[in-house]
Length: 466
Image (tube, rainbow, N blue to C red):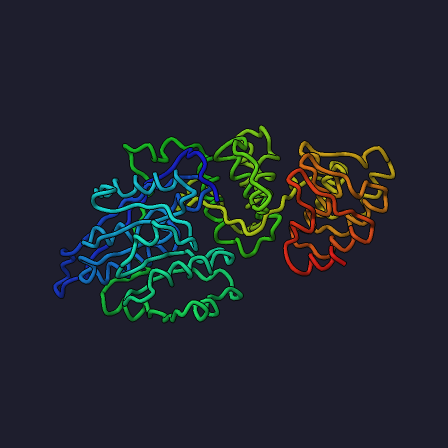
């Protein structure tokens, strides 16, 4: 999760109207909420898809909100909570305690809607699953809100354990809107474990009874002529880049891990420039790989990164039209895994040994080493060899070819990690087995961690312990 510097943004307006009167008069209840969205590769700087839906439901129940004690978890830009506060609820907005810039931006979202933090709303940093004093002080609440908090399976239980603690011994309710990202992801077992019961709300019926069409809820105004967020001064490249980043969200499930990470790295380079954050610790395996992918782009100019990003999106989905006239809705790259892919459209003659290893081109790996044996020791700026890249990508054909061609099986990168560290931490069973069979040792890296310490799962640990 990034909490890095912000480079540009846009204002988005959400308009909520009451049910039309019989004579066609649409006057009456009306609420406008403006959210400043920042084009930063951070989860909390833009409005996720489920937030307007949750806000719409709250709007349909607005007469029941006044005076309620409402807590929103992982609120990002805070759209649902801001709406509840505007409808008279006593609202506490929370997001990750590890993202101070995100909490500061949340304060700005409140102020943009006439809500003063500390007076009209409360803002607090939390760590899901950790029941510190701040969490105890949040009780009692009448209603807990969350939208799109179930996006990372490893955090499902942390979210629900926090909810269970806050609901324990009360008549409170947890109202959650989420986007189903995989049919394999479920919270049913966790609900049972934490003594929670859930029910689905029929939005179509609610829409008919309230007179609100939730599908037409959001009216996004893409530009404000007098605002710093206006697109009037954007170049055609910037407009196309924004359109491409919006489109990626729609095709995430169609892309493989390597494609997703390459897009991630280019997006970070495009919006924030050269990697300027310290390398994450060894416990954050995914974070380390994301860091490495971004850092690998070194001093690539922003415009070059944007063009490469646009070209990749067009390559991965040829049917998308990244025309200059398009207006971006939301700028975000969803990254589900953390590996890196080389530059596209290179011919075989232009590929280096490291490129061939990343692309799992076993025959080319053998050919290149046979032609020039000295390149067996070739490394990138982070000290990664062909074996490291092949292990990281689970490129088994390239991995076997590199081993058979005499590459050092225990070569270490700049952090003291071997190819076996990479295969084990990524959970690549086949690559781990190949390396062990070839004689790879369980050396420790600079953080005093062996491949066994970093093993992604029990199967990898069993292979390394055999």
